[in-house]
Amino acid sequence: MVAPLLSAIVPSYNYARFVVRAVESCLAQTLQDIEVVVVDDASTDESPRLLAERFSREPRVRLELARENRGISGNFNRGLRAARGKFVGFCCADDEWLPEHAASLVPALGEGVALAYSLPRVVSEKGEPVPKGPGHSFEGCPDDRFFERLVRYPNVVSFVATVFDREAALAAGGFDERLRVLQDYDLWLKLSARRPVKFVDRETVLVRWHGENASTPGAARSAQLKRDAVTVLEGLLEREPDLLREKGLEKAARRRLADSLRRLASRTGSTVEARTCARRAIALDPLSPRGYVGYVRALARGWPS
Image (cartoon, rainbow, N blue to C red; front, side, top):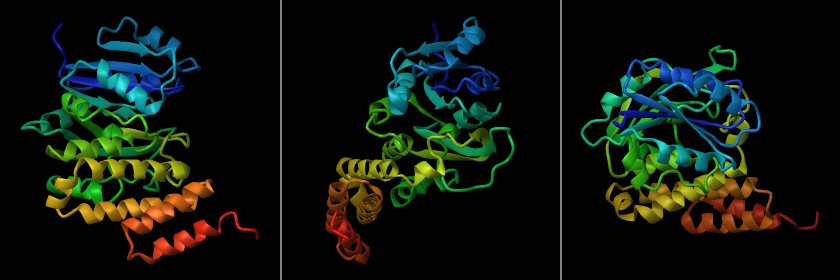
C-alpha cells in the first residue's frame, strides 16, 4: 500500500459531541493524498460507537481505539507512530480543519522545513467568534526568529494549525509524556533548533473554545503549567547548550527558567516544592530581586501565624 503524503491525526477522549465533525473536516480537505487516523484514548462516552458507525467503511479512516487511557501526550505519540504519511498534522476532536488547511501548509514543507504553521479562528461551542484572551492568543513571527521567539517567550503556535515532518518528530523523541500541558511547545523547540520553520499567514483551522479545553485560562494559571515550563526549559538547556550560546540565548533561557520556578513557587500547594523552586530561581538569576522576595515568601510558608 502506497503511503499517503499527509496523515491527519484526530486524538480524542470523551468528545462524542464533537469528534465526528473533526474527522469529517479532515476528510473534506482539498488535498486528497491524505489518511485520517483517529486515536481514541479509551473514551467512556459514546465516541467509540459513533466513530465505528460513521467511519468503519471509510477507506481513508483508520480507528485506533485504546483499551487503556494513556493521557494526552501518550495518545499523541500513539497517533504519531500509527501514521503512515510523510507529514502529519493533529486535529483535536473538539476542533476542525478548514478545507484549505492541508493544501496551504504542506507545500511550505520543502527544502528541509520541519514545521509549517498558520493561524486559528477561535470560535465558541456554537461556532461564534471568540475574542483573543489568555490561553488562546496566537500569532506568527519571522521564520528566522522562530526558535529565538520560543526561547524568549511562551508558545503562541496553535497545535491544530500545524503540519510537520513525521520522521523529524520521531527522531526528536516525539511528545514528552512527562508533560501534561506544554507537549507541543516542547516539540516545536526540538524541531526548530535544527531545521527551518515556515509561517503561513492565514486562518486555516477552527479552534473551539468551550471551557473544557486543556489550555483554558484556569489551566494556564495552574501550577502544572509552570511545572511543565520548568521541565521544557531544563530539557532545552541540557540538550542545546552549544546552540543557545551560539545564538546568544543561554541567558534568556536561564532567566525564563528562573521566572517559571518563581511562578511555580508561588502557585504550588507544596511548601517543600515552593522553597526548592525559590532557591533554584535565585541560583539561576541572582540579580533579580523577585527571587529573594519569592524565597522569603516560600520560607514563611508553614510558620505559625
